[in-house]
Image (cartoon, rainbow, N blue to C red):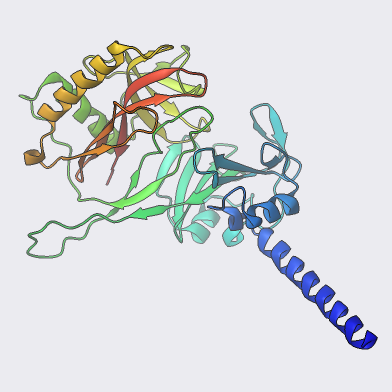
Length: 358
């Protein structure tokens, strides 16, 4: 009896050791944690293996996680090169085996051989690649593109679009990229790129359209033609609701707005996004609802379903009286009339854009 008990105990110890070893091996893969809930066993295993601190980072090992506070899931992983500086903290080089055999000393030719051609240029020396449903934002330290400064990895979420009802022949549609997730708050906003299928079409602006519609269509046009660089102006120094660090004035003006801006998040090399602020304040009063309904009326008039725009009302958890309203056209993207309140009690109504490009 004692012999059987000892054997069972040894078997249990060996099984447990193998299980821990297998879990640790899985957690050592840096892409293992993408999409995992921060309360999950997998996340805790990853955190323990990498010895992450309360900010979900280990600057000595050159790794940092970005967790979405809304759904508590890991949305991206930052892998640092030698002496990469982020928010005043120096990160050591990540050295545990990069995905797809990437090396920090890969030049552009070597990197392209491993990840394919870059999907877009997102900064002077920064590029975005897509491979196996994963996006890699890669920034180089110098103009010769010979040494990688950092790599950011995140899932590329596929979102199919239904084809037209009447279609004589199949039309090949190129993959395009949706701009970063709309801003929520400085604490909650983690950008996620979304891949989507959209028809190849120029942004056509009707000279007879209202000033509001022309301005909004110019946002789509600028993104389509130059990723917003054609309207980028001086650096903004004023505070903004989301506490974004890298913000810029623009050459566009949307009638009725308080101001608009371009921003890069979380890095200065991240892709540019556009937001138009209609009203903001410390107290939610009737003037917020007045602005909301004023723009709702104008958007309904300017973006009707007969012109190919789909209108969707999305319940807003932060207000019982105000919905988020999306005006979407699969040729260009969508503009959303949005209301938010951040943890510090600030209120804002703004237009955010979901942008398609060829």
